[in-house]
Length: 244
Image 1: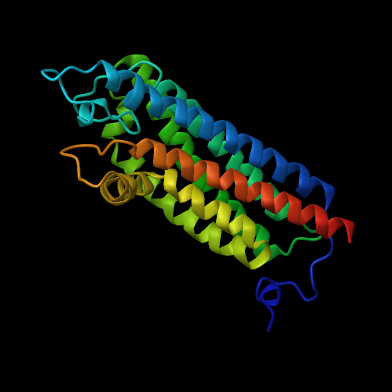
Image 2: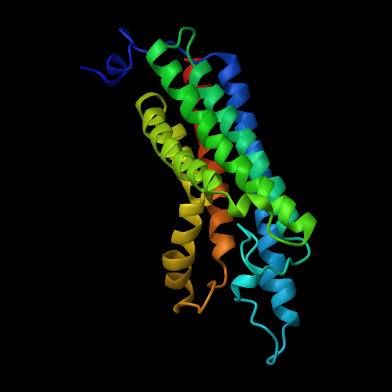
């Protein structure tokens, strides 16, 4: 049985609709903007602020400067939390555009795909929106926002991560490049951030920091950039399919 049969389709997919191409292009652009803002925030911490820290001052690696999800004692650095907050809110919008690409790629999307993908995409986007709102509010208020103390937020972020995993798998059934793009976005979830901090960044720098390994947020930003490039490849693929 073909994979599209498993999703409720009884015939091979028709050429993608023009709206799917528009949403794919918008997704790629939004993700590129998000990656650029994340890189700006990372540079503000590791390059700009890092170059001003003296030997007798608090290390730039201290978790007190962590702006990805501020908690506990927090010292906000200029040009970090607000750009990141905006970037993650943009990323939430980009994920909804990715969802629209998946749902709108065919003239008649099966009910199985629609009613499965829609809640998964909304839940995953909500996770990025919560992360972005918390980062923005924390930078604006100069202290961790109330969202950091809510177990409901922690639960929502876990559900969002699982929803994004499921959405990535679902996308692979229909448009594999969309699934790969969604998988790259896992890098900017809270679990993705912890993996970058505890595994990927130490592999690149050659050591494990006492708090936050340098470049952790840069790796997260690059995962978003990779998602943007994958969506661009997906757009090209859909365009070729439409012209056949």
